[in-house]
Image 1 (cartoon, one colour):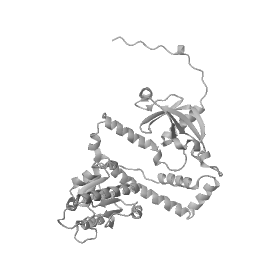
Image 2: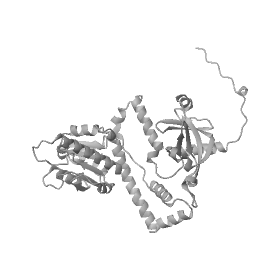
Image 3: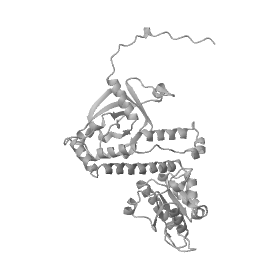
Length: 402
């Protein structure tokens, strides 16, 4: 796995000895530069304004001991604790702005650094799966920085997929803006006027247009997961921990919790009141406040649902196709902390966003939302058929004699 190509971009090196001739960090920074990256060096932890300027970094290199008391001086325990706390705070601040690999290259004992990271529950630090990697500066110098990074990348599927995706994303973003700019330098204004004339939220719709066009310009992805074959083989698919992890991953694919949502109502928004769930199935264009209408006045078309029991789920589950719902329902799973919810297609209510917004718990994403909307559309247009009498059913064959 070629770490040099996947980590190309600019690297941020935070080390109090950066720029000091002869120090080991200078050799590491030089090797990063020779590998095709641009190095931004900092002698101290970045300030808040500086952090915002690091959003496009390919990766970060952090020295754990960001102070110098001179050679042979015993470091007070309080200073060690404060240094560790400040570094952990920095790591959290960095990943809020940019989820990228953070490599701690240190002269300290790596196991002590790992212990400090493991003690912080929020970081969920566990090598090699973590996006934080701890290694001694001596090992980096001896083996070569990109050899170390490539070995780590081969054990970290999240970082590998992130870097492959970023490569395609950046290429598609460039294609998109170059294409639109070549058509007209005024393209944002032209689209803005069109959206204004249409009476919709210009900012929201312009963002959606860019998102759709960006996705259409991305090349087909080619992920090579062969290096992770051993990690995949080590998973126990029948283990309770694996099953819980699987549910969380599947939920992340189809459901976005409310703390990650921004802006007003949208199709797929799920609300909860006591033990009842409600999902908005109204189309995008009708979820927008128009002609001076307040956002709180936008009407929602809500299907009512309830949490499915394990028995109900197993009754509807077919391993080949997933869930085989009854004609008057749609089942979504997993959402909202692993819940399975059965929405009744016959139960639809109309309420305003203002009346419901405080009870929103998240949003169901396409294509799962699209399927639910299609099931409702089919149900709404169903023909009325007379019920088939039980007496018309063929008899059940008797079990064969053993």
